[in-house]
Image 1: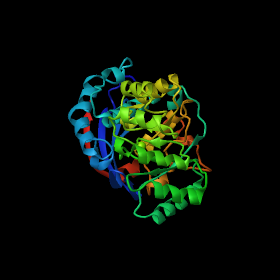
Image 2: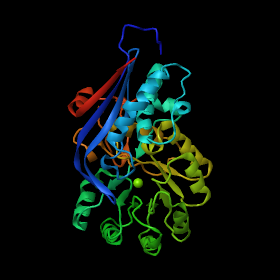
Image 3: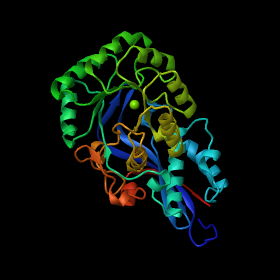
Image 4: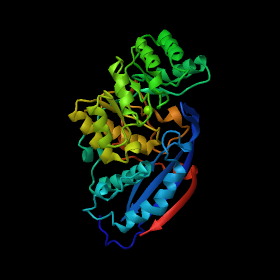
Amino acid sequence: MDKNHLTMTNQITLIHLDVPMTEPFRISSGEVRSKAAVLIHIECDGLSAFGETSPMSGSFYSEDTPESAWDFLSDYAVPQFIRSRFWQPDFVFQKWMDNAGNRFAWAGLEGAWWDLRAQAEDKAFTQLLGVKPAPIPSGLAVGIYPTIADLLQACSRYLPAGYKRLKIKIQPGWDVEPLRAIRRVYGDFPLMVDANAAYTEKDIPHLQRLDEFGLLMIEQPLEEDDLQGHQRLQSCMAAPICLDESASSPAILLQAIQMQACRIVNIKIQRVGGIERAKAMIELCAASGVPVWMGTMPELGIGALHALYLALHPNCRYPTDVEASSRWYEEDIIDPPLEVNAGWIEIPTAHKKRPNVNLARVDKYTIRTANWKF
Ligand code: MG
């Protein structure tokens, strides 16, 4: 990027969005009814790059919220990023970022920086990541519903798109019966559960009962910091344990793998603080023979595409949680939206190099902005 080009406005804009969802998303710890995200828009020397910060509203997945990410980005990270002259070719995001927290905010800023880099070097994300474009298997995730009839109705609404596996959210009191109902209707279709840390070690005898359903995996059954509990549960369950919330950094992930607290890992760019760290964690797992897959918050299209580019890594060996745009949103902010055909997502040509953002739709759902010129 040529910093001597003085005729264009160089600026970073934060854009807080609120996008209507097709249905509320309910997990063991809370519910969201619309999708909030903070976009980071970098305009530098005629290039226009986007990243997405996508914590859940209400802080029930992690302590990060759209509001906390906004405050951190505007009070600290964006001004620092500009002061550190991120447009210089020798700028290394990972060396510069502070690893202490605010990982969702870092992930959004880093995503925008990758996009800028891709354009400046005229390379596709896939080239920068060293992966080859190919169709990606997609899995359906459904939340917690008031009744089993509602759950089965949701499955019947979305499964015809051919999703490659089904994941249901569980919590104490909502596990055995919903699983039995699903097995009755869908036979031996690949099925997994996600508890979002809703159980404790006291529930281990109960969780062992879930083995009767032949699950592909059980995702984050116990609390985030309870690696020993996961180890104990894994030693007495046939279903592989997949860590999500617990796998917050490369060091903790390595510890979990060495302890045999999991056999599979859900990698989320947002949770771990960016594409680079997510890739490092995928490779750390590969070196230990642990397969992974790409999870979602879910994000809007920009974050979803970043996850899809990484899902092309050969150690991503299970279907991704990235679904069709229409699964969660009436309108996505990328053009064209993502589609699932016979269970596969083919990255549309318009997004092959980088996400193609629909600016009019971003405008439509903007609730506030902040801007820094540099
Ligand atoms: Mg999860």
